[in-house]
Amino acid sequence: METTIRRGTSVLLLLATMACNPVDEASERQDEPTRQRQELEATNGETLNGLAFNGLAFNGLAFNGLAFNGLSSPEFSSWFEQNDTLAETVMRYIVACAVRGGETRTYTDGKGRTYVWAGSLGLTPDWASGQPASETEQQLVSACLAAHVNKFGRTVAISVQGRNAHGEPIATTSAELQEFSQREGCFFGNLFTNEGIFAGYDDRPLGNHESSVRVCALGKPGACAPIVQTGSCAESCTRDATNTYYTQCTRNGISYVPITTRLHPRDIYRCGDLKCQFTESCGLGLATVQCTLDCGICLF
Image 1 (cartoon, rainbow, N blue to C red):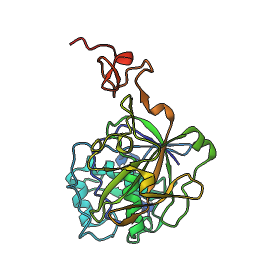
Image 2: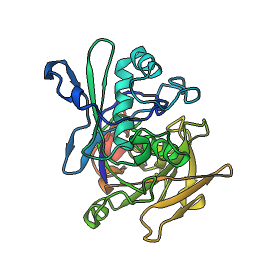
Image 3: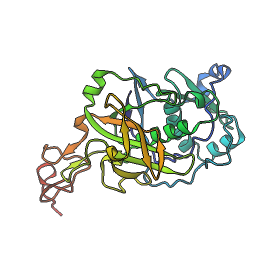
Image 4: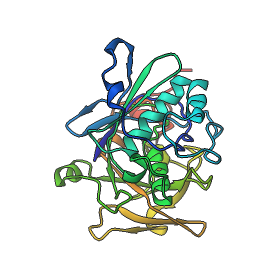
């Protein structure tokens, strides 16, 4: 499934504590002017989404102590209305990861504003139907959110690979795999249990002359905190039989179901391509931080 990372705001990934119950058909018939349509834009299987991790700690809605009782619970309403802009952003990605494409989830806040969030990947069928999230579903939602983190909030398309909680592969095509030929990374962990979230590089990390908006898996350690970079995916993860994605990753003795990502080769920038990217700077040299060929010599 190809997804596109778009300009995002810094968000907490600590929302996934309520089941996403099926949308109320009655709420679907509300007058359009009262609706806050915040669903992910979708075109030919692409979903425009993205998260940015920078600047915020894990101090939002705690996982423990909240029942999986849907979007109408007092706990959810209290959390949402503390910062509705931030909460709405988080919910877009929670629903996109958890719920199948073609389905939506709806919430009406205390001010009468209705939000509609669209499903996409369908990673957690049971949780999306209103059941408590299993450990596998917790891991998949956590990994999916991490895979969609974009530290810089820039637009870049990624290919998301893996299996849902029922073991069914995420829909993909050979054309997608060919277009997104650059293996990027693996994302895994469990935010529900405070075990943390981790990322590794699938092919290789960025060299000193390379840069990308996708630094959470490819960049230097600490580049995308609080995501912890673990090095090569191959050292801690097991590939599927088709060598397309990883089926299991292990960290601190705990096994996780991961999400695997791929990039278009153009989204890794190289000093010397004669285009000064925002990730590069002027100076005397061929490294990203002093890329003379692309950004020239610093005048000051």
